[in-house]
Image (cartoon, rainbow, N blue to C red; front, side, top):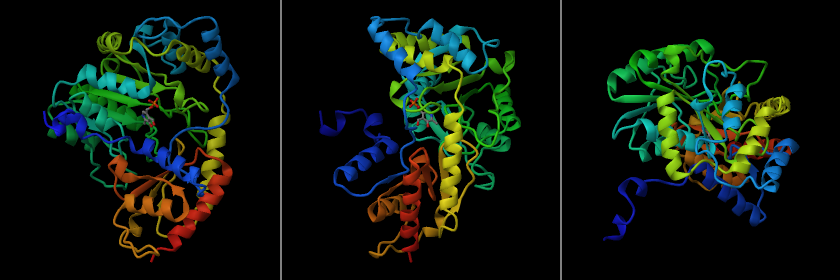
Length: 402
Ligand code: PLP
C-alpha cells in the first residue's frame, strides 16, 4: 500500500477546524510572551455557574458513571423540550442527547444522506457543516444569495427555491439562526417562509439554534411554528456550548427530530458512543432546568457596544451590525491590494488575518473558513481590556497598510 493510500481519499482532504487551530496559535504566542488579543475562538469565558458544577460533581460522587440510555438520560430529553418551549409539540423520544451540537449534526447527516445527496448550506456556513456532511457521504452545496451581501448574506426564499430546482437530489437545508459567523438574525417570517419551502419540496430543514439565547436589544428568538406538516421536516439542533458561561467543554448537545429520524440516530448512537458521558448530562440537566440568567446576553451586548465604539472610524473596513451571537463581522475587501510595512501584498482575508496576528497579536477568523472570502469574524466573548487594547492594535495595523 502506498503511503498516500493509508488514509481514505475522503478524510485525507480534511484539515483541522480553523477555529481550533487558532487556539493553538494563541497558546504559542502567549508561551513566547508576545501580546495576544484573542478575537478568534467562539467561546464564552467567566465562571461556571455553581449549580452546573455541583450537578456534575454530585453525579461522580453518587457513582452515576455506568452506561445509560444511548439516546440520553430520559429526564434530560424531557427537559430539552421545555428549554426550547416545545414540550406540547413533541414527545421526549424525539430528543437525542449527543456529545455537543457537532455530533448532533453528524448524526443527522448520517441518518439522512445517501451517497451524493445534496446538503444545502446557508450562505456563510459555519466551518464544520461542510466536512461533517462530506464525511456522511452527503454533497454540501452553499446557497449563494442572488443579491450578494445586500441582505447581509442571508438566504431568501428565491435563493432557496432556485437551489432546490438546481439540485433535485437535495435532502437537507441547514440554516444557523442566529448565524455564526455573520451575527445576523433571521426574522420569524423569514424562517417560516424557508421552512415552508422545505416542507413543500419534502426536504429536511435543519435549524441550528446554538446561539438562540444570545439575542440583543430586547428581541425575541423566532422559534418556528411546529404543526403536523412542519414537524415531519423540521430538525432542531442545540446544546450547551454557547448560551452559558464556560460550558463548551461539557460537550453536550441535542437534536429534536421527527420520530423516524430520531430512532435512526439512536440506533446509530447505540453503536458508536452509547450516549454521552453521564455526569456531563447531569450538569446539562441542571443548567437548563435552572431559570435562564439574562446576565450573559446582557454582558455580551455591552461588549458588542464597546467593540463597535472602539472600532469607529477604523480604516478600510465596514462593520456589520450584530443583533445576536458574540461575533462582529467585518467586510475587509478594501484592504485587498494594499501593502504591509514589510511590503507584502494583502491578497485575501487570510493574508489580512495573518498580518494582524504577526503585526500586533490580533487574532481574528478569516472569512475564507466560512466560504466567504473578503470578511473577518471577531468574537467579543472576551475581556473588556482585550477589546480596548485589541481594537487599538487593530487600528494601528490597519493604518499601517498603504
Ligand atoms: N453550530 C454552530 C453554528 C457552532 O458555532 C458550533 C460551535 O462553534 C457548533 C454547531 C458545534 O457546537 P458544539 O461545540 O456544541 O459541538
